[in-house]
Amino acid sequence: MWSRRMLARLILAVAGAGLLVCFGVAGVGPDPDPRLRGSIGQVRALEIPGVVSKFAARPARVYFPPAYDHRPAQRFPVLEMLHGEPGDPGQWLASGGLEHVLNAFAERHGGVAPIVVMPDDTGPDDETGMLCMDSRLGKVESYLAVDVPDWLRAHFRVNPNMAVGGLSYGGSCALQLGVRDATRFPTFLDLSGEAPQTLGTVTGAIRAGFGGDVRAFRAANPLDILARQRFPRSAGWFVAGAQDAEYGPEVRRAAAACRRAGMAVRSEAPQGGHDWNVWNRGFSDALEWLTARLGIV
Image (cartoon, rainbow, N blue to C red; front, side, top):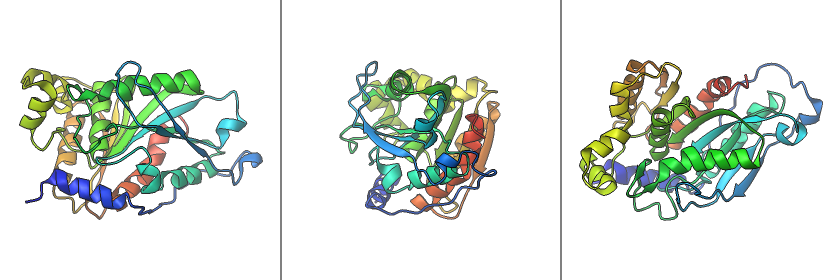
């Protein structure tokens, strides 16, 4: 019997071989800077150390919009996009076509788009299973919420506006960061994420990640936090394939919990299952909303 976690791993592994589906992004008006017409952004592979978390991460991929080099006085908002499990920081580029979608967006917005960082969220051996929390398995949350933003601020022209998104395991991470680190990530995109995040079962996550300490797990679990706190300044966009019988109910459960906690919530269920057609469509549909929340449009 295949578990849903095993099926998700298989889908991501097959998709990672190079499937590319791109969706155009609607623009708003003409390009006001002729120098940037036809320009494309740059993607760099960069080492982001785990100064606080001590998390051993593979090199991140960072997209810089065309306007970054042409407007030296301007600071840019940051969007963290997180990969699935198994996966790697290049997954959103190789399988998701993220660079092409962002370039299309920048072409219609004067060369401006967010700086998009695609950090490692599972570590070098992503087959062992991680929790996107600070646990015995590693301080993933501290890496994504502290080390990555701090490093970007120290090396590049970024402004305080940040958002986070991800697919499958990365969608679970985005929900986690949007709840536990809501001050830094008041805007998040959950694409087919699990809720609550587990290692096959909640019991397994509590045992492996928290040494059997139920209270410690509940203190980190976003659904428990949403039940006792309000988030009137936060907003989340939730996507799950209409045919995703495993993760679709979990995404709807997380969206309902966020709505009850006072968040502004949007949801969509495009045709498809737990696959790149859904995730690419979801990212493209949410991009204008994300960038509006980041102050670009």
